[in-house]
Image 1 (cartoon, rainbow, N blue to C red):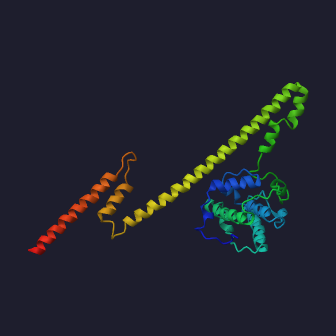
Image 2 (cartoon, rainbow, N blue to C red):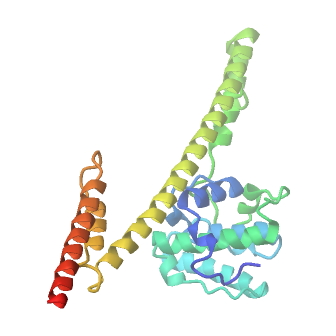
Image 3 (tube, rainbow, N blue to C red):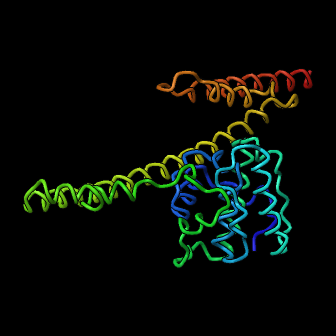
Amino acid sequence: MATNIGMMDAAYFVGRSEILTWINATLQLNISRVEEAASGSIQCQMMDMTHPGVVPMHKVNFDARSEYDMIQNYKVLQEVFTKLKLEKHIEVSRLVKGRPLDNLEFLQWLKRYCDSINGGIMNENYNPVERRSKGGKERNPKGFHRVTKSLQANNGSGDGVAINKTAAPKQGKVCEVSSGANSASEIHVLSEKILELKLSVDHLEKERDFYFAKLRDIEILCQIPELEHLPVAAAIKKILYAADAKESALGEAQELVSTSSVDVGATEEESDLVSQD
């Protein structure tokens, strides 16, 4: 079970896009930034889904905007952690400030914990919208999906149908319903494509950061006083600092190393001659 996991754990390499997708899909929300979870209500509901009946949802304020209200949510969360005997410290003072990195790290830990309990499988019997209605001050929680109503309208349900029923012939109503169904299908396909692109971008960002870190390590190594004046270090820097992306600096780097090898060879020959004399 994941409780106090180290900072080098794979959980902390999960990107923002994946975290946001997980929250939105699990709780039927539509948040676009991790800072929107600063109030603590999302964390409380995630624990409610993972451990049904443990979180007193009537105490959770989904409309929390002030730091005071947010702190009350984190108190509820801390009480839940205590009940479950989770030794996880919550940096409330940082989280309520809406700092992206602090909130991301806490959500990364939360995802790892929830996955460790249910194997990453969502509780099919859990109704996040209904459970939010148990919240203390929920009116219209930020990020809540409004897609359902729009799809119902597109599918011909609600007041729109009643109007069309009297104002238009049956054939027109059938066409409208068919058009709404097609729109819903298109929205679903486009949503999946967007999600796929976000995951792809997130993967590329992590790969970029991985290789950049390696190049930075090489740069630091070449700047060590014992190495920075060596021809090999100069050749490596020539490649690292090459400004033209179209032309490779490998040739110049090899020339630096070759020239230094020739100079070293000549110096050794001179030393041999001196010793013979």
